[in-house]
Image: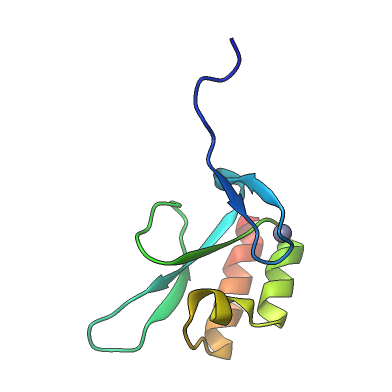
Length: 93
Ligand SMILES: [Zn+2]
């Protein structure tokens, strides 16, 4: 009788398409007590905190190029952090 589980959908921050949450890359804000907030790729998809999704390698590149994560996560992200996300993200997508 079809699928019984509802698959959560998320919207890509770069292209606006929706896709199943599990097929997208989630970038999340990580808060620290004693240093500025940082960003990381949420590989489990279950990390708590503000997150932003991209659906493809193309969209990840676009997001990095336009510094989209800074606006989406409302935080400062330095170039090194963008590079790390890009490198790791391209392997996952
Ligand atoms: Zn996209």
